[in-house]
Image: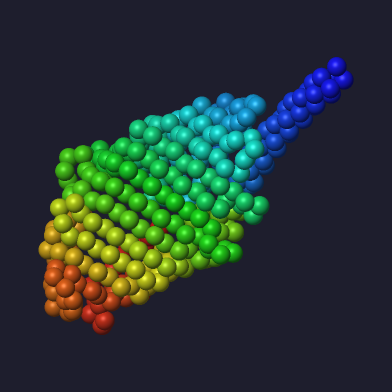
Length: 324
């Protein structure tokens, strides 16, 4: 009898302790969200979570919102979307899964606005004592509709963004876009695969500073580990090398560039950016004259960028507009 009473008492204490722990953590999450909103508001950024609710007792901790909105008064970026659902296991609260419902809208710093939708949008986050360590975002069947140019609607079969801390204050980023195509065939379908190293940015991000704000405040420096643009119909552009972005948005760098099937690549770029068609034609002629061919349909080029001006050696190819 005494053993039974002892066992029952132990179970009750465990249940009470678990319940108290869950509500303690839930309260801490709500406090952290409130503090974050206040700190961001002081910096000119607003986050709204309509009908915010923390639930999931007893084995999960979930943050749910009917609608979400983010607005940055400094950069002009505004993002609005539908239902937000997050979930983390009570015994592993530093790992969370986030799902976001469409439709959504995105306004860029230049004022361009996109209406967006997707079949699924899911992200996972792992955090350590010093802040986030890994972040992954994946969207399936994503549709981007420019508000002013609906005919330029883009459909993306698979879109991924991955970020992780590297060293004390660097960040590795990877962006993957599969089968991006225009709704009306205005430009060729393409795949994009990019990996970057951003130096001296992790602490800024942890302190709730966007990368765009960091760039405008002190510029960006890092490494393009790989940039690969591949039209489905043929041709490929690969770029790697050290790069910098000034506070004015101008690009600097020394890049190793590999071009495959140059005529097909130029054709794809000219269709995608018709206003730059002449620049691509001029660049194609310069590449054909100066490049050293090392294999069939493959060309290696050393490209230099200074203040947005592109050149092969001493021969100029053109100028890029500021990134922001």
